[in-house]
Image 1 (tube, rainbow, N blue to C red):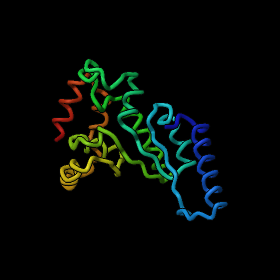
Image 2: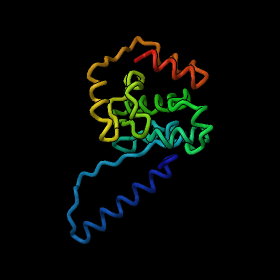
Image 3: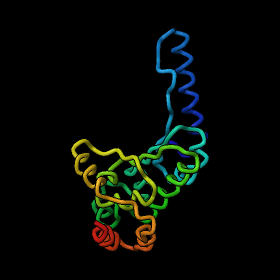
Length: 178
């Protein structure tokens, strides 16, 4: 979990130390090790351009990102009733991250609970996401859904998400786009 470049530099230093130690001990390791980050804090999403210049890829950790964005624990039932998993602020942070990934030609993968809902994929595709991490038992259904989806760049879905002001509005919107 990173929030800024200082966190990333600590990580990179630890990786360099480990590589030097393996080399010194003449232990084989995959010479080309790609490094990436989890975008799990609003700070990391807002600094995605800066962070992505220094890594090979990023994963959006939707569970933690939502929790930190809304300053709310996922275990509190009241909050689950109040907030949609794709709260407009969450979508905005995802959009910022995906744009940074495109700018620097870095893969951005969506992980966590949000990636498990097939009804959200029209929005994910409109955001520019193309990589998803889903639980194995959800994979066949998601794959099937994706086979029949097209990317509608003229769609107003993203604008409508940003204009939604309640969980009920977001749920209605997402159901209407199935």
